[in-house]
Length: 147
Image 1 (tube, rainbow, N blue to C red):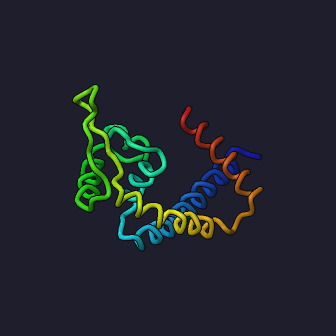
Image 2: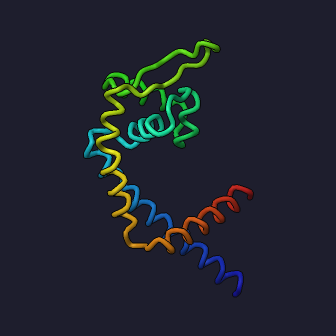
């Protein structure tokens, strides 16, 4: 295949992938908003629900959000009584975000529905296609990261 054809194909792939991600993200956000949360609040709660207490300073890198935004989100979730701050006993510079019993109850009730919504969104692919896409997208991502 000629270089110009390769470039055109790469550009088309970029556009198709970008549009697919936008559409999928929109559908996922619609699902999350049904529960009275924004996507960032949901991501923080989901992290704490599934992984346990987290240093606030590390949450941003785990959910791919700028650290400057994390404090704002933690404040909002704290006001909603869905998480609390807990100082680290060994290092005064570190504060943990801890999901509250109310936060656990909320996530336990909505997470199965959210998981089902994700399954519906990706219902256009069978299991084999999903596995292949995961492999291919990881390969593409690692290659792009290495450039």
